[in-house]
Amino acid sequence: MAQLHSRLIWFILLALLCFVGFLYWQSQQTNGTTRGPGGAVAVKTALVESQAMSREVNAIGTGIANNSIQLIAPNSEFLIELNVSEGKKVEQGEIIARLNNVQQKARVAELEAVMVEQSRQLERLKNLATSQATAQSLLDEQQSKVNSSKAQLDIARQQLNDMTIRAPFAGYLGLRRVSQGAYVSSGTVLTTLDDIQQLRVEFSIAERYLAEVAVGMPITVTNVAYGNIPFHGQVSAIDTRLDPVTRSVTIHGLIPNESLQLRPGMLLNVRLQLENRNVLRISEKALLPQQNRQYVFLVDAENRVQQKEVEIGQRIPGWVEVLSGIREGDEVIVEGVQKVRTGMTVNKVGS
Image (tube, rainbow, N blue to C red; front, side):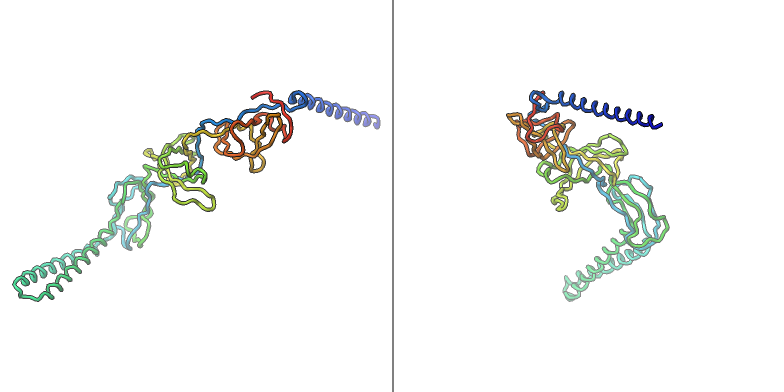
């Protein structure tokens, strides 16, 4: 039994030895293929060039109705008429609801009668004044009464008008919050009204893009509910202030929405198209990310490597904009980045 255990141990040791030998041989083969003459690491390089780049800013936005209000009861009274069909389109000035206005009508009728009598008295005194049969003071007093009655009548008419709630703009009614015949208090929300045939989208962009964005620039939005279907619009307003915490500026865009697919409150993915311009760009494969920084490896005239930190900007598939850190004409490593270190000598096998 002991002899069997001894053979098993020797077999395991021999297998491990063979495995280690295979790994060593494989590493030697790899080094042989990635190193050029004199032991230099073989890499592929590319020159930094200035080229036109289609530039865009991506952001997360929120949908906002072009116009949006809550329709509320201006007074405490019984609701005698309610014309709320949820989701229905209404035109500007259309009656939405009417409160009990019997008292207001009676008040208007009373003041109209008083106004007629006061005006008659004023005309009589004016006729007498032409023949100097009455004092000017009586005429002035009657004129004050007429003016007072007219002011009271204007107020009463406005109060009567307030008992009828109309749509201030064309839009779509929301959910009904009350029922016809209910007693509502002043400030009670009856329903909502939204103009969503054009949808505003609110989003923020970084401070560095402020000088490049302008009203009228094209934007494209997408939403998870409609997959990759794009909705196109343009920038309609730029906030005059920046957020002092995030150093970002708020932008409003306007999207035509005749199909009513987009709704207020939606989470929207926004792409803001900036003007094309020449920028320094390099292959994404040249970047070496470390923590929150980005580095590239430069190759000098003697084929020695130097690590350089860069600030990057816009990304497009396969390419990245470089804002600072390198210059046009510099040679960067695009393949073999993980195998080199500062000060090493490399063998350029492609460009």
